[in-house]
Length: 163
Image 1 (cartoon, helix red, strand yellow):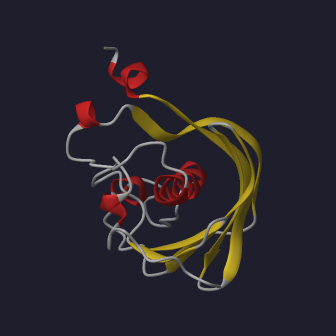
Image 2 (cartoon, rainbow, N blue to C red):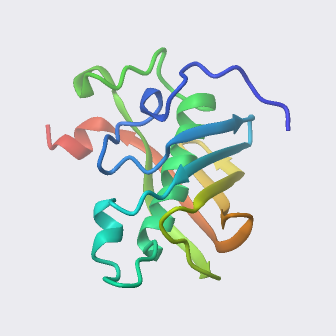
């Protein structure tokens, strides 16, 4: 996979999300139509500690969010409608990049547990104006645990802030 030069070294450079809801630890690669990211499950994450006591596993909703955040990195990195992307000031950004608008399908094929490395490979299928259609595959230690297709859009930031 050919990789573009990363503008930022960390996911925080591309996403508004911050811990504890930032679900991407590392950007492995970005091309014009694909992004690969990783997260190491520690076991103390808020979404693991109660799901389920005695048998902790990564919730399906969090797998979808990992896909979405990874796709958001691709949008911010390759299809950003703004001159620069400064995540430190929400009023600076006229767009909220990569807002989930539709999950077309999701198939859960396995589990991820604390200690495992989860990798998300997200492919851009189509872009129409500010609407992006993606497919994703999540793996835990090389085993497929989820495959999904979803759509994100760029919307005015004021839609989120109510201003």
